[in-house]
Length: 213
Image (cartoon, rainbow, N blue to C red; front, side):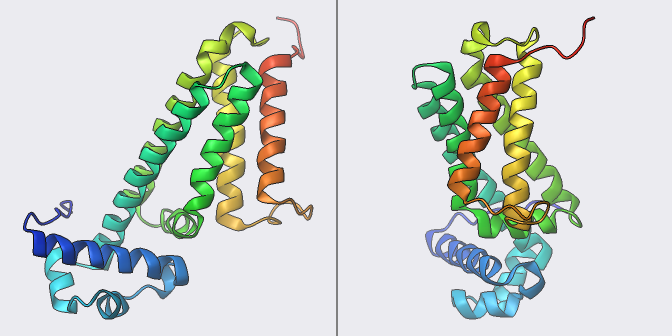
């Protein structure tokens, strides 16, 4: 299926953005199970026929909303990592990087949750989400690699990859399933982020070998 291309004329562009805004809001409220083109039309003031003419079907509309969300989150993550790179000290930079990642996820958690579930059945959304996650991992590593000389792990690149997986996967699972899916210990979002930052800093800065090779 070819990608939906935004219109170039101002009036059409405004209608296009209204449709995407309405679709995004509806997805946040109802998830993709309760998502209908009819309701998007009612909220955006754009006819159902015009929406289908532009997007083709509901799946393409959802994919267009997802593409816009990923682009917006990518910009926010780049800004967050730039801020973390300006922090002085490895532990502080680790905390700032993870806090920035968490803030972007939390700011977009409702739509992100819907798309995480939708990605299980839509390969386009799944592939785009994976691409965005990998790009974020590279930003994370680029921010913290200047402190590699202070890591105890003999392979800093591997250590940073593991630290990213720990933080990203934990935060994403919280967004997707809520606070008590795998544990009945309730933690606030801030407490979870703080503990993740401490855990990753301990791993990167105080790693100890568990075997001898």
